[in-house]
Image (cartoon, rainbow, N blue to C red; front, side, top):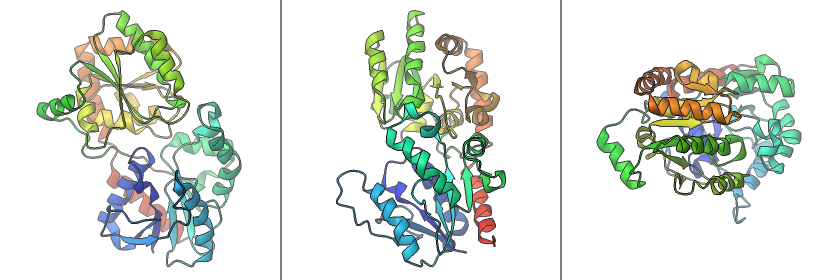
Length: 374
């Protein structure tokens, strides 16, 4: 059995889906590297020991996001060339939308946010999910989801048979753990964090519900809390309301934007925070709360979508639309040492239930199952 994994995500900063792709391949390479082939449009310096299949991108001269056009070309190429592969796994759902002539196909669906919350995404994404996504689901042999919640969404909205979907949870990297004071202080100096921190990690996009976090933070400041709110992550889409809310509430001096933070800095940043808050409206899994728990940082997150599935009773759940409830819970954690310590211990234990090794082993079982399909 030879498995081809579409790996162009490794060419970009490793956030979200990129983290999943990297960690999955990393663990698979430890278990069974001889059967793994990485399909990409260019070489990169990750995983030099693995087999590579480079399919040149004829649209590489396009100035922005050439991988969009490569994904289209890939559908044509895979049905024209008979690659020596048995299975092709697309670790995100969009790239391969045709029924493959020579291989069986597996896709990973992380979420269907543009379909369920079209107002939080760009119109192009909504139309992709409305018209192309059903074709992708129909022409795949097996679907992997990060959570039972996403599985339920696929069954509900697209009438996918339950036995066609396998749930495999993600995990936090091993470097997400409690760190020594000197490592934490080093990252504080790097990002000029000479004040107590409330942390948010994730994209700046509408579904992340950051304006609600800002309004709750404003209420905390009125109650005398001295913390600053540190927001890390790249600007994605429909993020203007974030900055409009900051202007309206006059929080310019108390909200710090770091932009994209590299993976090597994030564990210490989580450790530097007294509280991690993630009031997202919808997540297919929600890695940041799990990463925070693995670092021993208390977590407040939403009681929606997959987040209760990930956090369990190790964090505090709130209605993401209720500013007062979020503000009250944040105040309780920041002013109660015993509660913070309890949440820290529960989070550390909860995070141990998830591992990338287990994730990779479950993927191999799916590969074997699909390979043996008639």
